[in-house]
Image (cartoon, rainbow, N blue to C red; front, top):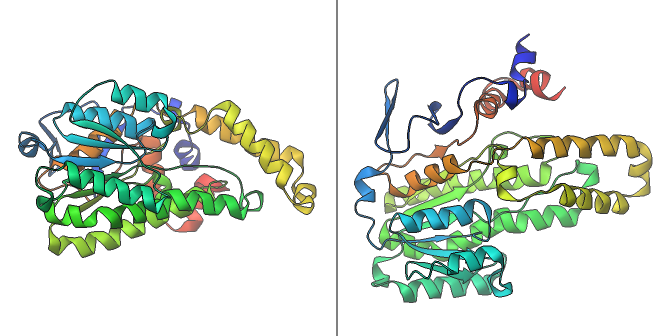
Length: 344
């Protein structure tokens, strides 16, 4: 009975969805976006004191071509920040870049930024530094948002795919962070890393993504310990299923990935698993992608709080109740129990 209830799909779960949590305390979305939220003995202030002093505080966001980064760039600009929006496709005239540029604001500047390219990261640092009124006072915030995803069981996934996902999600985060840390330290500013609920709990057919996000979590913890005496606050945002809102997967892209994957499989793997098994797994991925939330406001609120609150949280959990509860069970109960409920 417990297993059946905990495995109910999102559409059948009652209630509203949590947007932000801290050390296990859930703050439900729907209580409002401003002022105070109180739940039990915890009180959350959405950075009200600091938001009044935003002025020209500079923030760089990676991965602003679409999804979270695109929305966040516009939102922080509206709050008064000086926003540097790093875009992978700026040089190719991507639609998202054009829309950001169309605002024609001296407080929102798009930059060509591939987080896998040392040269582009270094040029981004120089661009930001030269744009600051007083570079010696540093840059207030960095949001490592750029990321890619894929799917496929371990035997279906090539080593090239593992390396490609890690190069963006993990090493791109490390590379960009290391490049901007001198500016962040001077400002005693904020670092926000976008991880995932799959950075806390593993999932079948998602090992390339899980590996990188687990790595982002560990990197963030280590850096938080090191930066604490230097005044830089490090936060991690762990979104739930927002695939429908981030344009990571379309039905066409899922099928294209699946076809390429099947065509490149070793013959022994194709023979042992069979096409029927493979297609069933692809169908599950399509169902998962269709179930995602299209409202990214909880993620945007979490990042904003991390950048503006006097005391930002270590971790934020913008996700619905189903995924929040599943994450708590999979990270706190014995593996045999969570496996029985969610995996077997």
